[in-house]
Length: 318
Ligand code: SF4
Ligand code: MG
Image (cartoon, rainbow, N blue to C red; front, side):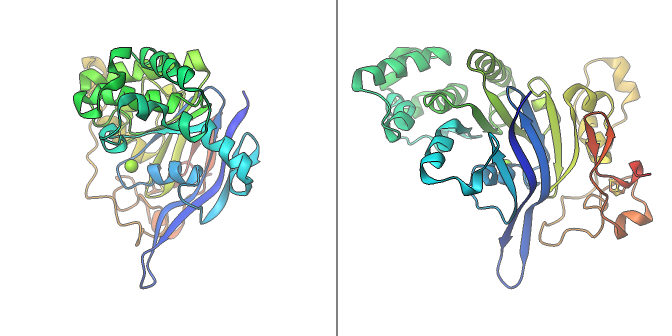
């Protein structure tokens, strides 16, 4: 498959004043292939959202580069940037916060079409009806307001909004985290169906591995601004290498009692340290149950552990 997105040594540092630098994203590299779902996972504050936002220039990168369809996003000219802004859409965690409460559902969904001046009035409303039906709502909903809908329905409106401009790539930033568990699966299934029907590529951001399990083809695990492991989804669950991934995995309840016994819960001590004062060497060492002397001195290198499986940890260095 072709690479749709190439992220190379991406950095996003925020100047906090008084000489303090917050390294929200610190030298992250990965590719996203056309048609896949790439899951990006880590506790809150690990830099996942910032990675997504920097990729699409909601934040300017502090270093490194992002290629989209082989073109440097940073150097896109005005016209190309407009195309890029259609091709890449975002879905947010809290659809309510991202939907203007004074706009009708029809206007919300058509906003992108209006900005890009894409359709006549008649085609516009027909497109809105079609999108409502595509996401499992009905055309009767077109003239209502966001507060009249449940969380799951609002997320469907958010999805319809993103789909309106026929994107190729969707960054879904914690799209199911705020929803009831019973609704989460419905939204995941909707996203999966749309991916097939519309040939979409997803970056799916979540704070725990249970949420990305059923949708991701590959998963990247982030900790404190760093990517620490990247693997095909199934392999990440069956053979997690990084101690942080192992700890995240044991936090997922396992329904099968046979597996439960073999997977001892690893409790991570303490909080994620401040990205303003990250630990020396391995950023995970202050919470790692397997930390060694070398971990405080040297930053582990990002390396290939197996085919398609990468990790940054001294335990796997030769
Ligand atoms: Fe733990 Fe060391 Fe590996 Fe970091 S490099 S995850 S501290 S063993
Ligand atoms: Mg976030």
